[in-house]
Length: 167
Ligand SMILES: CC(C)(COP(=O)(O)OP(=O)(O)OC[C@H]1O[C@@H](n2cnc3c(N)ncnc32)[C@H](O)[C@@H]1OP(=O)(O)O)[C@@H](O)C(=O)NCCC(=O)NCCS
Image (cartoon, rainbow, N blue to C red):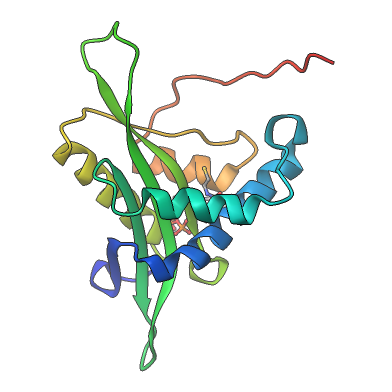
């Protein structure tokens, strides 16, 4: 496993966006393969994703994180990323907002080195600094690796989203 000092977690830059989007698309395609009723992708998804991410880069209540790893005697490479945003809750709870993780992915060749855990811990500290009391996310129940990761770091299952097609 990479040690914490090998992993650099920092705000993503404009020139990271292409690679981050490609990583996120791996997840989207995986989801579409699970069940296209729920996750059917538009044909121009890459261009849309890039526009969405560029629009959120640097926004105050958005977190776009890049995880970089220094290869031994080699360059620093982008190994993974995370996108989160502060989101408003309906006004019936004692808290007004929560942090929602939209995307998290690590390149296949850098997995099981603690990079996702590092990104999540960074996001949790950011959420606390933003004054919100919880981080949320959705994980497809077929995605055993993601579910294992989230439970390991401390997330607890609350909802089971259920979808009933109308045709
Ligand atoms: C899920 C994912 C983000 C994990 O990234 P990672 O950097 O490999 O995860 P970490 O190394 O930080 O793993 C931390 C712990 O999570 C659990 N975990 C991670 N991957 C796992 C796997 N494939 N199987 C079982 N447990 C796993 C383990 O407990 C692991 O600790 P360990 O290595 O000491 O056993 C990565 O597999 C990925 O990018 N998958 C495709 C994208 C995706 O599914 N994203 C989540 C969408 S909701």
